[in-house]
Length: 113
Image 1: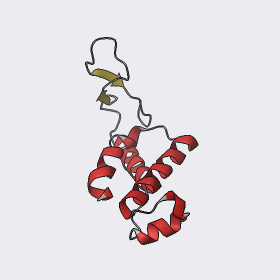
Image 2: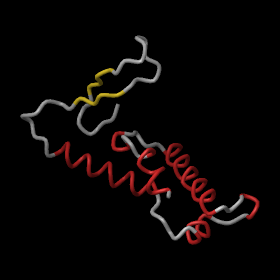
Image 3: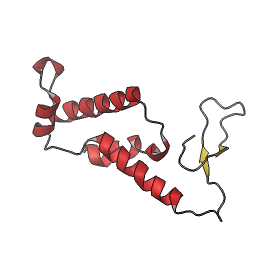
Image 4: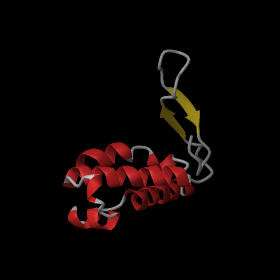
């Protein structure tokens, strides 16, 4: 269930995230929380992350998936060549000044917005 409903939404745009250690910790905690809820293991059971993954059927962890997607995106950007312009990513800014309209954001190759 996590693979179908949660991962695609969580990983949308993860190729361009600037991953910090704090963000990696939050992603790992969210992944563990989702698995605990799916398998119905309460926190009072004091099960380790390894035990939760074993009872859930050992699904893939999110952080290696994010790293794979980032490397794949970097490969696409690296193969673009000099003849193409720098890619533009269309995104919604956090609190836009003009009523929530999408803004074009210039992205240097290899760096996210």
